Image (cartoon, helix red, strand yellow):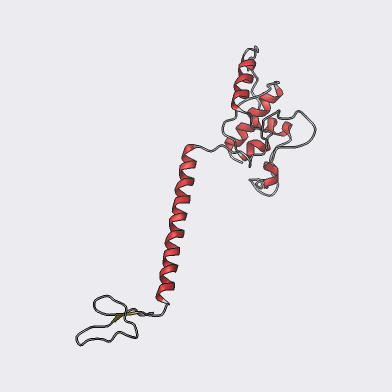
Length: 181
């Protein structure tokens, strides 16, 4: 994957190995859920963060190559068959289930259920939806006009009234009509 993904995974593994209970890796993304991230309500995050800040922790570490961290976590990319590993399927993006500490009450672990997106992404989605709706309206209008054009032509007199069987054209009147072409 990308360098940012590798850095994110390496950072998460270092923090996990040092015994950190939680850390903020930013926006919710599918690959983060694959690494074991889970959504935590904001109030719970703030209260736990305040409690963890009181613990004396120092991050003085010797330099360790990312490849070693990735191999120790069991998430090292395979080097067989090309320079880039195949992208994981949708099942790999789901958090692991089974025995172990649960996420706690009120926490959603399904990334498809709640995935926060930025304001710009929301604006883009709204713009695309509006554009698609406008296209659909135009398409319906065109189809509606097509059905009118295929209807039986209606003749009207020069004064704009429909010409029925009982009306007779007077001398000098012009007949106007629609054509199906």
